Image 1 (cartoon, rainbow, N blue to C red):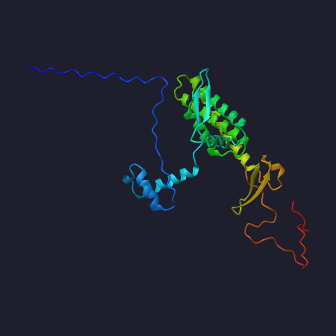
Image 2: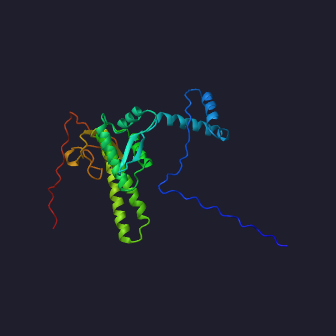
Image 3: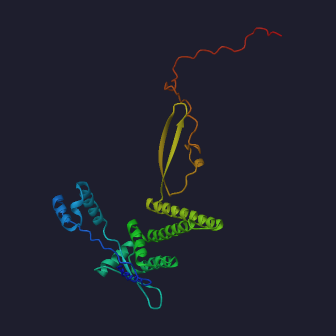
Length: 292
């Protein structure tokens, strides 16, 4: 007698609709509004899943991170809606439209809506050109700009450029790894190198703008005999490049120069003249006849 095994019916695989966004996992972070460690731990023990599995150090670190996260505040966020005729509609999102709009003004250091719209469209055009025009990437760009806290609209404009330049450099590097032909790899490598150099210069420009054109020039005089270095620090206003020929005490290109006249490496100092009359120096030649 043979047993007939029933074949299991295979369940058809679920088809994912094209363009459907994956479900996001939401994590709610509690914010204990108290300075008491015991009270804060009691609130976290109630609201944090898996709190009982953490040891003492992990609980203290979690509490510190939560407080630091609260001090930073929530960045500006927008909601993107596809228009029927093409393009995107960008609107502030959150419980309060006024609060969200003011956050956008602060992100771009703007006092009106016009520069906010200008910078927002610049970001949208770039992300759309590389196929990354979605809420996640757009809000990531806003978070970067907000974290740098631009002090004026010039810095906000530069920060938009910095984000786009960095993203373009990373894209060139990622395509470089999958390049099959040497000319293609060389082209992508040169492009990535130029973009990374531009990104570095943009960071230097931002730092120079925040310094206000103040430049610190250090002149180092090295005495090779004594083995000591004297550092003189000068502050030049204007942010230009100081030239050695314009500085009377410049150390030269190599950073070392001749020792000062009268310097004694043994530390005896320069002799001081006295009032006594100096002895006559004997005449070097003698009156003796020379030998042939």
